[in-house]
Image (tube, rainbow, N blue to C red; front, side, top):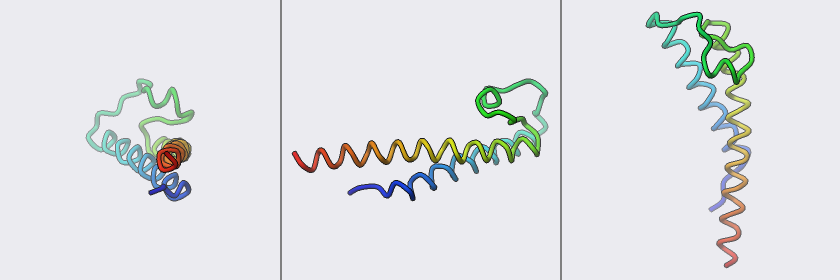
Length: 86
């Protein structure tokens, strides 16, 4: 069974984006936000643990997750097609 690359990419992108968005707001709401740079902010330009940063992080994460989803689905489909021929 092959994966639909487009659907898998959209799903991965949205899951990663929503996950980062929720994590950012959770940190803001529990009051543990500090001004210190985070690992994610070193990867996603403009991201910070702020309301504006949560939106920027969401957009970066959607793109990042979609790219990873495309690569994973493509490799999965390649491996499945090779194993079905054997």
